[in-house]
Length: 402
Image (cartoon, rainbow, N blue to C red; front, side):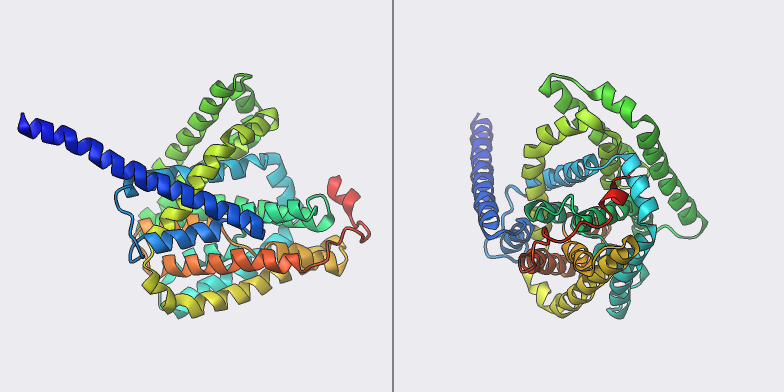
């Protein structure tokens, strides 16, 4: 009886510690989110910094609530990419690819190649270097969308160009991530090729289903009852993510394509209903990524991260200039489109997370965190110094809307 009583008494004590840690963490994240809003930057860098401070090698390591945060982080990245997919329809993605294929190709070459080259120069080998190339390639859709909205550029020609390039980037990740996931698993030879073909094939099937049956799926899950709709879209998301993970496509791509599958009124309502969950769990995702990084490893990659940030920031501007020239935009608008694309964020961290789970290059996580921190903070500050451009003549708007 004494032992039983001791066990019963110990459980509430552990729960109390977890509740205290989680409560303190969430209140701290709330303060940081408010601070980021006041300053006018994304909260992502602040969440990463908090993870660095309270994770491995941090000031006060948090261990009791780590299991919950890890699960919450996985749900967070799935919800984050699902809601990102909600911003697009399959038809929008195909149309964006047709209109800006050349600019999209330039974007990929200009921004992925420096990352791959940097990894090879650091002696990482091809697989982690390819991961770094994907990390440096893709802009943060969340931060870019926020900048466009705050500056009232969403409907301007530069905003439409930036959005089209984001669409191409996100679509390309549906192909790149499955390949990277198979490579990270260590598959090689004929088996590796077959696994890559299978993973890409499954991703293509999911996208084809989104393109062909998206409206039907949207009607099927739609409900005027908020609870029923929320449960339906979350079930669809987790089911698709799990199916994708089973075929080594990666849960992130599955969640993104699940979002693309939902369109029209269903997508608009789903965005509203899932927003609070997305904000909560995505914050835990960035926090947990920071938890796994020892701050002592950052000085060793700081120089490489800063050099990559400088090179790829310039590459994004060059992408905007090339894309703007092809669309006949005035040079200031083309420059703004490129500058808006500078920040990296959620997708870059998600890609690095896959590499971390696979046990690839240990320097990849701290380098990615530092790289994202620099660009996520610098980009909004650079944009803040630009003229708003709303008085300039509108170029190519009719052409963009066709």
